Image (cartoon, rainbow, N blue to C red; front, side, top):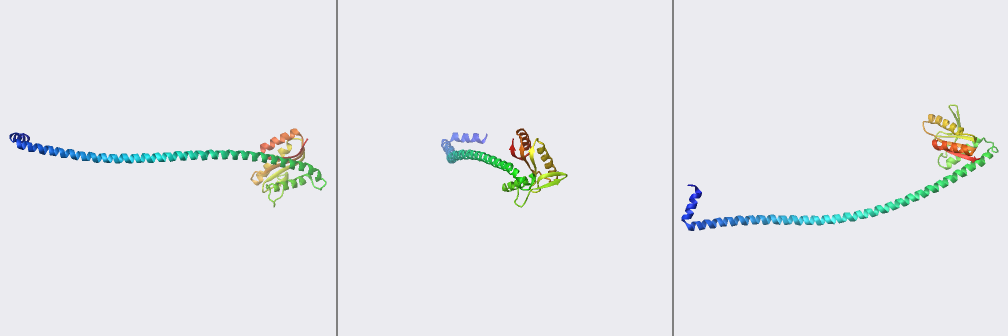
Length: 238
């Protein structure tokens, strides 16, 4: 007979013992249930704390999100203001460019007229056309800040090429002619500029001074000048 069978037999023989055993079992079961309830209550309390923390985090996130939205709104307003300021600046730059262009054309026109008028006076000053024009250009370039005050323009012969206007530093090469019948003078200047470039190892500023030319030749020379970065100065177009 097993131990369990013996226990059942004893309980059947003694109702009092059976009742006491029943109470012991019930008490143990109640204790186990109470313990389980305490554990469940503890877990539930921890869950409530976690939910409370989550709620607090959600509130904080909502506040942070609201701040981000406000900051984005502020940044958008700042960006719009910057764009407006930038557009105004572009407009002002455009106006300045137009004004500078008008001023540049006025200066060029005045200088060209001066070249045309003073050329006729060169013969009375005992100077050749090249000498007289070179001196005028020298003063003009110094006034524009292109040529330092302690430098001067001169004529020079390099590799058998006679250069009307020359300076080593800054590198300058120029050609002077009383009348241009074709684009030959511009082509001569480009050839001389190539000789100077090889000698100095750097690209010179190029100036072509024409006292008089006709409209068609002027257009042709102007096209060559634009394509080759030649500063073209024409006294009179007939």
